[in-house]
Image (cartoon, rainbow, N blue to C red; front, side):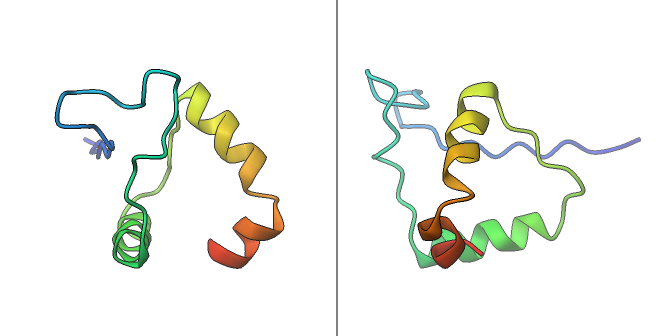
Length: 70
């Protein structure tokens, strides 16, 4: 049987985003990026929700993403 690994960034009071949908409270730094890269090596498929996918799909092809998140 396969395994499902869930990784969510949730505030202490249980919210995924701010009142207007903002994600600017996420603490994404070098330590987080190393953690995320290690997690990606352990899974076969990544599944995003619609909103996160649409946000990331607009980010991935940008010069900033290519430079900061190769």
